[in-house]
Image (cartoon, rainbow, N blue to C red; front, top):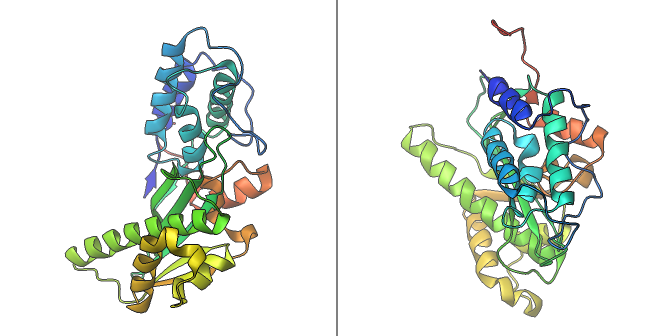
Length: 273
């Protein structure tokens, strides 16, 4: 299967009056840090909100833009010129990848695998962290998220562990769904993160004084690990696919992770294109 929203993406480009714009290889600058105090207010906030809202629906088949679309949507209440510039960059990227979509392949056996990451204190206004994850059923991407955490984290390990807890919760829901569909997952769900402290905390039964403020998340994850339902493993940052959901990346790394998410061109020319 190939899931694509080409026609819808074209409508967004035309409604933004950017049909002749120059294309770009990534939807966000790797050094970009949007803030509520940046620049002057946009001339037409309603136009900004309409485009940002339209891009949200495009993320249904384009997880590669999930993070940056979430970023521009954070400023819908009072968009400024730098926010509008970031939004136009997304559209320039979409213009160059109109025919990209999500591939779904036959896959066996039934297994769940996930990657999770957190950008600690990434928001310049609130210093809250951004969590991101992606989950694969076999070789297919079935769930992903890029979301700012609701609470402030006092360390990178805490931010990463909150992301792990959210990922474990999502994986349990998917495991139960597959069980109801008579496709039970027989093996432990593998969850990869790039923080060694989090991997250690997920299986260490000793409660440290410095971790009591996230005690609920720690016990929740440890219980699933002890039952054999989940395994938390380390992955080097270079291979942490979930980075695409938490921060801007250089073009080479971005394209590599995008391909790992199975967001690619169609395998053959689509009739009518």
